[in-house]
Length: 95
Image 1: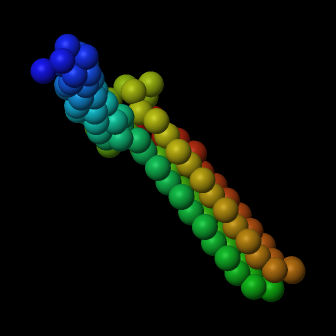
Image 2: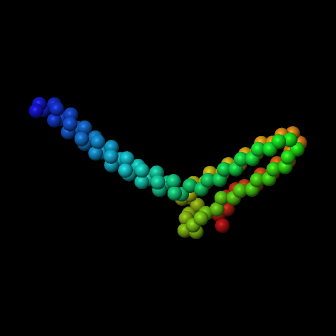
Image 3: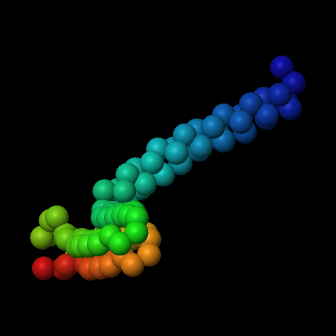
């Protein structure tokens, strides 16, 4: 077998092994990050002369978690017609 063919397959094999190891380690990191996300999404829609109230609080599930280790995502959205009342209350509770 010519030397250049061995060189191509030798380099390709090394690259494939490196790619597989990188994919496995990357997947582990993504799963670890995903475990520590706290998300809250609230959406309300109403017509004319309606009244809407939204309240949301993100809380730590585990007292052993530090707040800097948790990624918080908090979204509230309200849409209403004319002469409507809307109230939104929300935030993060570290207690």
